[in-house]
Length: 423
Ligand SMILES: [Zn+2]
Image 1 (cartoon, rainbow, N blue to C red):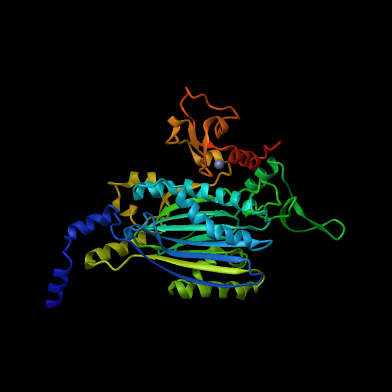
Image 2 (image 1 turned 45 degrees about the horizontal axis):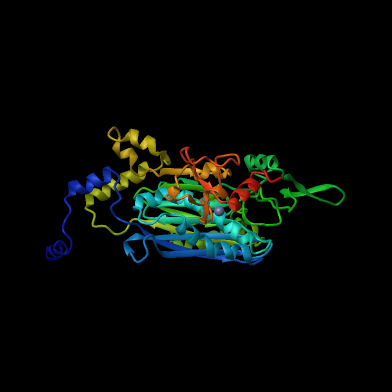
């Protein structure tokens, strides 16, 4: 009794009805814990990773914390992987307007990630190096997970309900028909390596260059239709949480998503990363750099009454019905409240390689001054020198409503090159 009274003094009791109400409305008032582990083995030493759990959306405000986890699987050298590791987060932050709310920032992330990947690639090109890298970049803010990726380093989500889903798309010419068609339409040639008097070996590659990926950062010596435009997916976990497994192809060439998830269930993230690597090595041996990050997004200790705990367990059982679209959840509201809880909400997904589709239409804030800010490199340029991404090299007359986004001459050139339009 005394103990109960003490805890009541420390923390004002929330009425049970309010707690249940919050659960039913799927309100996540509490922030989850993020626990992680990392394991890997090097064969060529071209895998890099990034773990940063102390990022702040508003610098100096500790209530705006978010985490970043990323993998960069380099090829033909390590410079692109290192450059991407050091640049992407900064470029994301500078692409997002200041003074916006948390909801606005979450909504701005997919576009900012596209801008950041492209800007990082263009900056790397200026260094005159030819190496390239995959990039799988995960931002965790509360229960919302945003994943941007180019290449074939996967990120999977394992929820407590037992369903495993892929949050990335493999940008491999061998396995991705859409990407093959895009590369071919933009002037690339796709085929296998010819050796020993015409025998074709290995996976489908793009020529010139011989890269088997259709998207990457770097790779200045291959065609510009090998683009750095990421596939982006944003989901909101239920308050049952979930586990992310982010890994380079050293893991995924040996294990399916299901196998990786099952190989490490029920253990801590730290041990889980080691188990996944061990399982991959057991089945295939060390053929490639192998890096694995495991990130658990789990409910924090919250003073729950026995009744809400029971409710939560029921929700978990229902979470096998995964990935309801947001609209479906809205439809469910009121009619079947429980089914909306425990469902991973799919907030955003877009994978188009067309820059215009990814930037959307926005109006530059300083359009009255006659100076426009490039949507990609953020450089200011007088409007007469640049081009709208939505016009075919015709400058929009000042009298007409502006059709953004605006690109500077340099970024417009890059856009044309990526679409195979460079003359
Ligand atoms: Zn620009």
